[in-house]
Amino acid sequence: MPRVASVPIGVAAGILTAAGELLFLVVAAVAVAVAAVVPPARRRAHAAILRYAAELVRLERRRLAGFLTAGVAPGGPATRGWRDVGYLAARLLPGALGALAYGLFAVGVVLAVIVLWAVLRGTLEPADALVQVVIGAALLLVNVQAVASIAALDVRLAHRLLGAGSRAELERRVRELTTSRAEVVAAVDAERQRIERDLHDGLQQRLVALGMLLGRARRSRDPERAAALIAQAHQDAQRAIGELREVAWRVYPSALDDGDLGEVLRVVADRSDIPVRIRYDVATRPDRPVETVLYFVACEALTNAAKHAAAKLITVEVESRAGTIRLRVHDDGVGGADPTGAGLTGLARRVAALDGRLRVDSPAGGPTTVLAELPCG
Image (tube, rainbow, N blue to C red; front, side):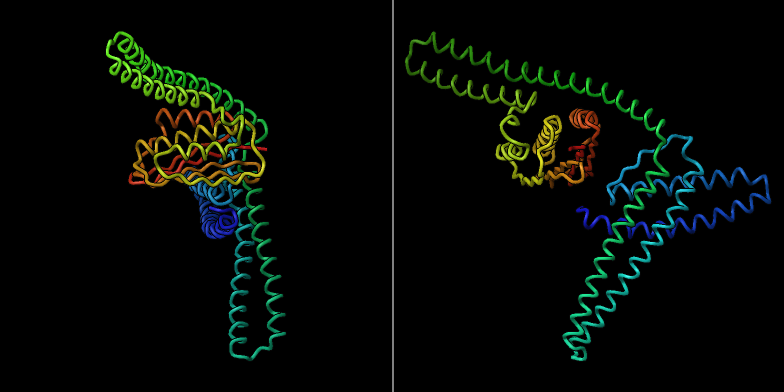
């Protein structure tokens, strides 16, 4: 979803969640007051409050990641608990500001309808109508800026109150890097095994057959028969060269030496048996490791769509926004792709090695969407 649409929706959703959080805080305050009078119920009340607070915070995390594109690193056990409750209380401020902004917008819409009605009836002079339009446009611009500021405040609060502390964040990053390094080594080993199988089961067998054809042609005493065998051997040699080129591209896409990712993806699309639409909107060319990983993600997604999804159309979109480059591959096939499969797991490891993330949405019946996000710039 474009950010110009996702941010207003995210702020509007935040108004609704803030209303629910206000209700929760009122109930929690009553529960704490009752627990203070009835000590045996204190532990149970506190546990229930923290449990529901954690669920509401989980909902806020999904809202922030889905609409405001702000993933918040989770804190450890020491940073949770009542800190979640504090965050929910602080969330009332952007929720109230959002309600005020949207309330003013609703009032503006009503006034715009009244002005339009007056113009149509002829009870409002054109000059007065123009003044009203200018004032309304200025207020609309202020309202849009207010919504953007509320979204920024929402994200800042989440990072401040939900994110891990500096030491905890450092320890988490060390664990992530250690894990991603091991996963990259495993992914490289798996890719080597896959290439070895392709060479042994495909190219090697074809070269053996090619040698046998040439041997038969050399031993043949019939010139026409020998010519036919040589022609067949030539066709097999062309196929072997094509297979070798495919294997080489899986090792390293050398085409990136001469062109950017958009040009290479268009070449891949032209070679696909299924129609592929390419939309490439990247102003500054990313680093080579980023381009290479995105290339592998796109090729794997296209291969899966062609082999397993029975897709009729594939859309590949690449865009860069605010230091992040995003690749989205969408097909209209039958879905059912397994994110834990060898191919997608290897891609997830490659993406994670560059501090990125890979998401696969492929319900049974389709469609399938593969989304890779990597930092750039």
